Image 1 (cartoon, rainbow, N blue to C red):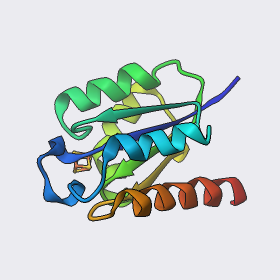
Image 2 (cartoon, rainbow, N blue to C red; image 1 turned 180 degrees about the vertical axis):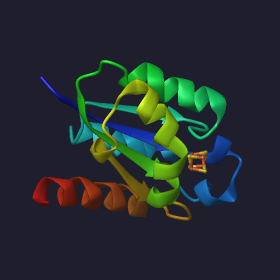
Image 3 (spheres, protein in one colour; image 1 turned 90 degrees about the horizontal axis):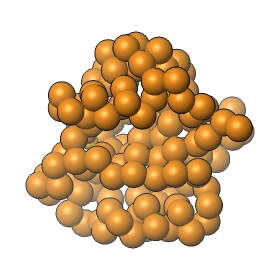
Image 4 (tube, protein in one colour; image 1 turned 135 degrees about the vertical axis):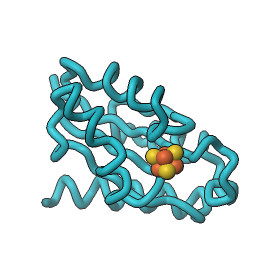
Length: 121
Ligand code: SF4
């Protein structure tokens, strides 16, 4: 069975862009509604060990949709490109959403909208 996952990426947790929200509560709200099969928080996916994390997660995986809430989706695509290629993960299965400077509720709504948009596309 294929799986949908949500990663939250938060610029090490030190960037003010993520200080208005409770990142764990964002993940909990998505979990409570069972909108994806798994969630995770990573401090910095665009760092070297973030690449390693993505490769380890995605290589030979049955993940059909990988949602990443963090910075701008276009930036995400550029920063994760090598890891996706090395893991042979189809980049079209990655869906990003920018949640910087949002509150907990705004971030949850933005993620839910992305999930709905993908279902309806
Ligand atoms: S991938 Fe984006 S959200 Fe994550 S640490 Fe890098 S710049 Fe920040």
